[in-house]
Length: 315
Ligand SMILES: NC(=O)c1ccc[n+]([C@@H]2O[C@H](COP(=O)([O-])OP(=O)(O)OC[C@H]3O[C@@H](n4cnc5c(N)ncnc54)[C@H](O)[C@@H]3O)[C@@H](O)[C@H]2O)c1
Image (tube, rainbow, N blue to C red; front, side):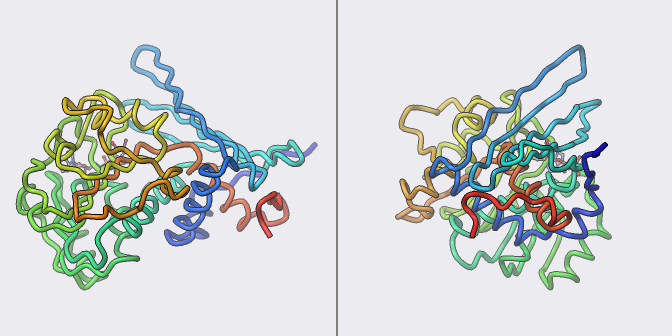
């Protein structure tokens, strides 16, 4: 009897890197823009204090489809992905999803910042230096050459900050929210905070803000001032993002004229990636199933090359 191959987090961390993940994410969202991919909104099922969430997509251009599923227990996640070959209609693999989630969440900030932030950013401000925050800074430093990285985290780890300074050659220091945000070209929030982590009045006029933390309608890392000042609010995919993101749902100033644009619209050329006039750009990420399916497909193609489908859209 055939069994479904399993790919572990360790295999994924040994095989994938931020640039290749960013590339496949761009390809997947470009497919979404042309109808070569489809995605469904996250389903959350709650019972008492336990939750199960599922998010999935079909990437027809690569003849794969799949779903990421994860429980939330005491605030912690445990991600798994099941990927199918839609040419043979057979399961391709079961994958640990923790490393894929870490890689794709950091890579999507870098992908969007590389296209929508001002060129040559000098200062990065990072709120939250946990698992996701550290991945965010690692991915961004692989693309941009910062001079300064300002860190904000009440549980700051000085040894990690020193190691970051050595590996990047940047000035790195923990500081206050205001000192971090003032003059920052890129601001990333990667906390579990349900309330805004800085005052949007402190943002520089052309700042790029990536908020990747909370993805529930009841929590937000960005305040109304940030949203009011933004000339452009980029989201991954409007049907899910506008319903899930607390930054959007709780925003008092939201209106039909609010400057939302999603990645399929940007890849379709319906709006420019960079604002015409210098303006604050917000990228609000909640995480969508297409990103998980795309990176799972990349992992299978590298780790189990004999099983990878050829895909309709590939050479
Ligand atoms: N957008 C996505 O696709 C996506 C994917 C995975 C995780 N997430 C979210 O990312 C967030 C972070 O996850 P994690 O695993 O890194 O968590 P974590 O617990 O490892 O790290 C969070 C860090 O934020 C710090 N923090 C808390 N409040 C803060 C504040 N006000 N200012 C600065 N720092 C603060 C904590 O001290 C901690 O070090 C979670 O909310 C998670 O749901 C989003």
